[in-house]
Length: 409
Image (cartoon, rainbow, N blue to C red; front, side, top):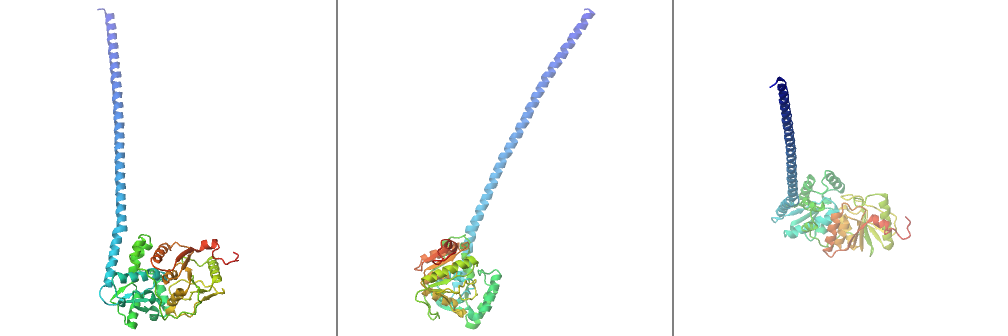
């Protein structure tokens, strides 16, 4: 072979080797890229699956957390609405049975709270207690103020007057101190209660074997007043009845037919110039139809200040020198003899229907009256009481229902 041909052969072999190497490079480079791509896709897919699994797991976790929260809330509500109230009621029932046990004297009270709560709740509660546990009325000694013994006459035959134990001003001061300490609703017996019982024993020889304290009633009915118990629940512990007349009460000379009225300041009717004008117009209109007897006594024992309306023809008031120890007894019998009672929703407006007298209870704000109006309407419908009507003072004024004929606003 010639030397020149060897050079050509060598060049061709080199070209083949280079081409083969380039082809192998391209092949493996392409394969490497495909593998890398598949690996990247696998990593991406794995990450996606991991994320989706995590999300599914998160949803499951959130779902489980939601179930746990709902379950906890359910058991909390069950505890608050059933278990705790039942335990609470059973505890009070045990206390009531303990009060009723034996044959000794049961002191009922002392009642130190508002007249309205006494008339609408406490007296029916005492009546229910006596009926429920078959208590002989001779065992029961009621302690209250203002001569309210007649309100309890069918359940308790003995009554002690607080204003025989304390001077009126001293009693009002001590009771105001009790209220200022946060005990407006007598949720527990206080040092003042204990002093009253000591004085009752020292002066009248009343030594209680057990005490039916108002805190039992307040604790029992509090859930109803707060909207956490039904009216039916409240009525299970109340017994309503007409209140019989009481002899020996020194009532003033009264017209043959008249309207009794009592308006006082408070949450139901705030003391504002507008309310005073509207109430005065109402009294004037009532006086145009017949005599009106205002029950304001000027006493500040446990009620807000009375609205007083001087100088209106055909309107009279009670004697301002009315004995404090008889003030509620006198007002009770004056209402009983009236043909109509009109007054602020609360206080004696709750009592009047149980005296057989038609009643119009006025309010300008009923935010705190809801459960009481509800209970009152049912109570009066369950006995042969006087008719009971509630009226919004603001609406009545807008409709000119309280303005005397010919009046100009």
